[in-house]
Image (cartoon, rainbow, N blue to C red; front, side, top):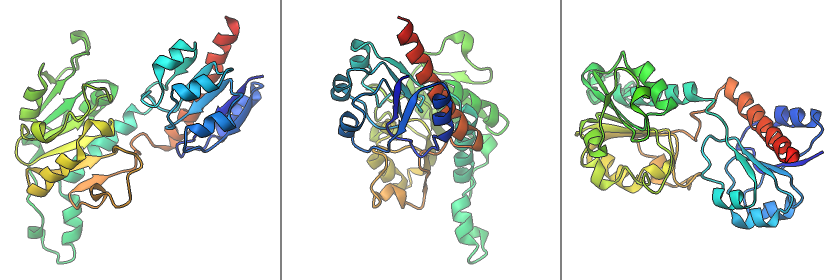
Length: 310
């Protein structure tokens, strides 16, 4: 029997995961921690951790002598000190991308809401005058630009291809043989930004991508462009983004991720009339609410099994 602790649920119902692991003979405790230091106090005997967003740093890892596995309910591993885990011989397992369909559809929903001025349209119903709405562009005359061409971006391409006049992408890591048909490849981010009527971000957070969208790169975008981020909040400089929306340089923005999360309730980005924000919900559906938990639980069990076999 292994002792498995859920450090934080990320808003998901872990019942199905607890039942799955309990049926396999493991002892599971669900916590809802907001401070990494509490892991040391409340999960000191952990053989495995199931983590959503709580940072697991080198201090936590060093303080859990029995820890053999960390499974996350996230695709990215930004919250885990991977070097410390590797040095400690801990098996770290993220989720496979189970929500490409949901995230791509969420991104497209935001794109269409901004381009078709749905927020302004709703406000205009008070006077029932379409002239109060900024005239939307014709979408078939626009270029959709994708910064990152992984599975989510490619799922977005499938949905957006019939709508846009052109789709371009940048991804220095995707081999040519995997490049999707109908997407023009550019090898320079500046070239991507220069044609992006819609800039959709699909890149992990790395030192190279932090604030990839900032005051300098926003100036490269065509006037009236929109920015969509369903990737990681750190990719966008939100101060520069709001300034560009305020000035009219950008038509608007759609953000499912922020930096930090959760934001302060008085963060101006939450209250701007031309910025749509959702609470890191792009992955969410009736299907993924269950599959994320089950997959994370199974990852923890598999990692423990491998560790026991050594």
